[in-house]
Image (cartoon, rainbow, N blue to C red):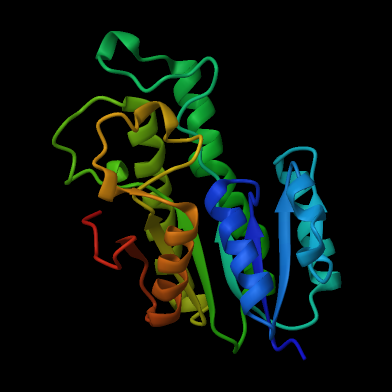
Amino acid sequence: MKNQTTLIIGANSGIARALAIQIATQEKNTQLIVISRNSDFYQQKIFNDSAVFTVADYQEETIKKVIQQVWEVSRTHIAQVFICHGVLHTDRIKPEKKLQDFSAENLSELMLSNAITPLLWLKRLTPMLSGNNPCKVVFFSARVGSISDNRLGGWYSYRASKAALNMLIKSTSIELARSAKNIKLISFHPGTTDTPLSKPFQKNVPEDKLFSSDFVATQLQKIVINSDIDGQASFIDWQGEAIPW
């Protein structure tokens, strides 16, 4: 018997896949729902009991429609939401090493992916999550989004987009502390994980600081379990240690 639901959004990333496998195979009392633009990975047998939604894009109207579908198929309350969106580089975009590399177009694209889209999901989810049942919502952020921790500079667009995400999370937590006290928001820094996102930047990472997706997913689940519903947003790393905003 399923007594709670876990929702994973942007479910095609390495960490999202690891989370999904762990939940599908280890959490027998949990209904798993995943949303992704590419759901090929979720055709495996272990996900036969999961609800898989494939979306064409992450426009707000699409988000609105798929959340309504999630509402219709969820068999119990949603206890966990993992919003796994994150873009650091593309074929066109590279982290800026100097100011002269800065591009308004690149910043706009990263802002949309890393800050605006995650908040649109929360906007549409909040009416469904609000109530008496505790719910923890995790956003994939990054330590480089910390303004006070910035000692190296560079990476203008990525830093700015993650800092913007953190501010949006912080502001929303203040509102939810009044209107939806059952919801806890967590901004999560996974560390350098061995995924395509970090692949071009792994050369100088010490071996013991390059994590597998499975390790990060395990750490994240521990953090979520141990997080209190306290009316505040938390910005924490893979060790569960607080990062300054």
